[in-house]
Length: 94
Image 1: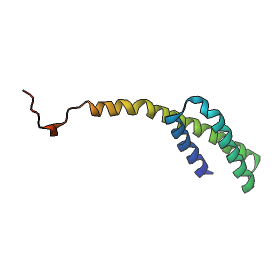
Image 2: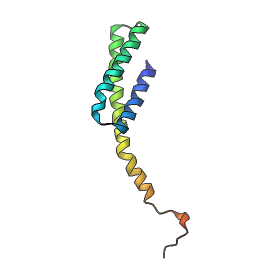
Image 3: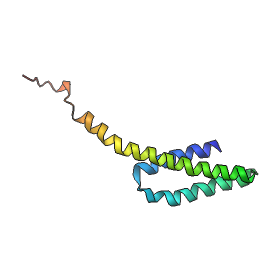
Image 4: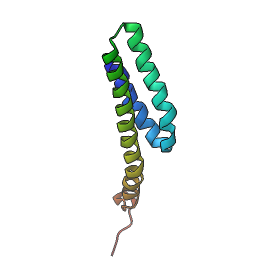
């Protein structure tokens, strides 16, 4: 189950980089269904299944927030690096 939770976090980050927040609705159902399906196949108890589904919900949303944060911060970081003058151009300032 830990692997599924890590995948949920990473998938949320990827979704946060690319899509608006409405993509979380189908993604939440998809990952909750997969968590429940894996739990049923492995013979888990009801409380464990509910905990796994809740963990999938939470980590997908935290990953989405992390991806959205990266989407907001990366262009600023790239712009800051591109605006610095390089020393390898050979142009001297006087």
